[in-house]
Structure formats: C-alpha cells, structure tokens
Length: 181
Image (cartoon, rainbow, N blue to C red; front, side, top):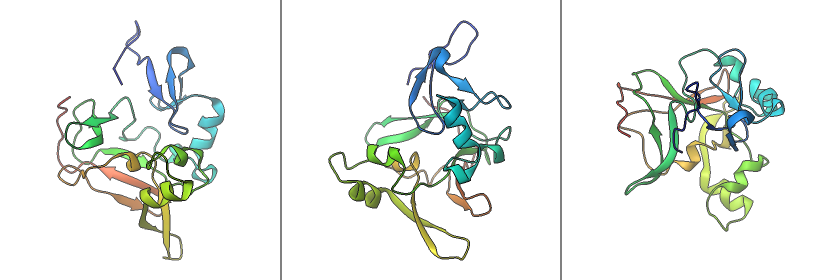
C-alpha cells in the first residue's frame, strides 16, 4: 500500500478492520471514539465492536496504544522472506502492534488464504493455530487472518500472547522498533 494522503493529511487507502476489504477515500468510515480504526460500513463496525459478533472486540482496545493496519503497519512482501508485517512508523517497546481475534472455518475471509487452489479445509488446516484454549482449558483451534498472512518469524522483535479474558491474540513489540521502510 502506498501512503497516499488527502489535503488534510488523512490516508486515502485503508483496510476494513473487520472484513479486511480495501477501502478508499470517502468510503473510509472511522471509529467515532478513537478516529483511528477504519471500516467499510456501519455493519462491519458493529460486528468489530464486540467479540461475540466475531469481531476484534474493538471496545476493549479503543483509545489504547494498539496498532492499526495502514497506520502503524502494513502487509507486504519482504525480500527473501515472503509476505510480512512491515512497520510504517517507529514503534516503542510494549506497544501492541496487532490485536487480533481468531476465527473459525465459517469466516468468509478464510477462503482468501493459502493454499491458493486448496479447499476450505486445506486453507484452515494450513493456517490454524492451536495456541488458544477455551474457558475450560481445552485446545481451541482458530485462524488469525492477519497473522496467517505472515510467513516469517517476528521472534527477534515481538512475541505472541493470547489473552483469554478478551479472547484475542496480542503481538506486543519487545524492543523499540525503528521503521526501516
């Protein structure tokens, strides 16, 4: 994504925080509270607000130091490594670069994942993470749509933490991370 700005310094291209669809210009709807999170529609914003609607539970993170796609980071090819998360600005240690809820096979964006010509089961099985437990401590297998697109380790810079209390995967940065884009 190029960082095209309008005359007021606002990004012209964003991705919907719920459905991941690319949105442009005046079609970008922002969270009325933090003015940072972007949506393609009121419907997606409503679904994203609480985790029980398969969203990220944005109400738990709104206004906190939490990264947003196209503002703090973007997905793009990393030479020699494939698709990865690339920062768009300097990120301080302990900043949550990504907060993401896991989805099951029924989420429509699972169909967009690799393998490109694979069945829905193939896509889910390739991208699933078993690091999550349900309320009873049993393994819960989910796909994290943004994390599934990253095909190299962020271990030198960040770690994964699943917060069972709000059912999201957090990826905090371990050290001050300077943007090198």
